[in-house]
Image 1 (cartoon, rainbow, N blue to C red):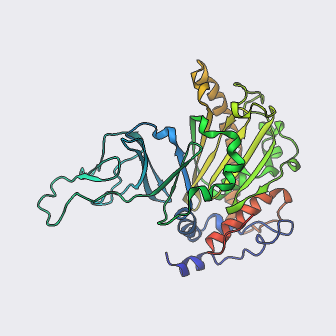
Image 2 (image 1 turned 120 degrees about the vertical axis):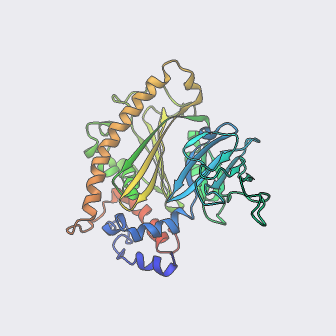
Length: 385
């Protein structure tokens, strides 16, 4: 997509959302359903930024792999025989077929169409019935490498040719979230939600403290304090961080495990939330960390993945998974409340009668994230905290 085409695609009136939060109104509804806007997001955000695609324990052993798609681009992550994580374009050098799908453990990758074989470093090591093809050799041919990095047990990839260092992208988040010691936690379960709503509605909903005591009054909202007690610290690159009081994510607000060792000195009502642009939200309680990652599928549909993390040593408890299920079931209940409202938000954005309303100062996090987002899809300098 050419730059001129992108600029025309996002030639909307953003003047009201770009004002200071106390004077601003929400963004025009078009950004939540326009296919042209989605194309701009793909080119200017998802193909340029560092993106979290999973946990290191999902590809823990040599031969383990994880295949996914990022805005339609097939991506393959694998751990090689030396124990290193590698990332490649999951696109066969012959006809472009994805050489792996889902997750698993393999000795090598074999294209399911014509059986071209690749080792765990992405090198082409075999191509059947190609000996008589003039000038064709398997040597020095490999799946296109993709930049990969790790932080706190998370795997990040970047689809651009020359990305900034992952540590530069995560500088603020490292400072804010180091207290959680997520590298000492382990993935207990995942919840995957395919939603009939634009991905940005999910992002905004997760930092919307304004709605919690209304929409979630009968669930975790009753364990939360006044929304005025949730100060948002605005970070670089559209990031946010807030520390607040909330009970554990169980039906009665009581922990089933105790405190995460790294949070032993925190109160039982410890909670924090941090937005890592463009599409990750790290949310923690004193006994549980449950980050969410939101992916666009189409302009009006998305996928959200919830990662439920607990300390590694707790996995040895005989009733560990029974307890985890309590957290999972309660999380699904809370998410169901959100999904109903986000579906209504999506419907409202397309209404002829929708006029963006004024922001509450409680929506300062949303305002900051949207301003950074709009700067990026318009090709301007990104917003700074």
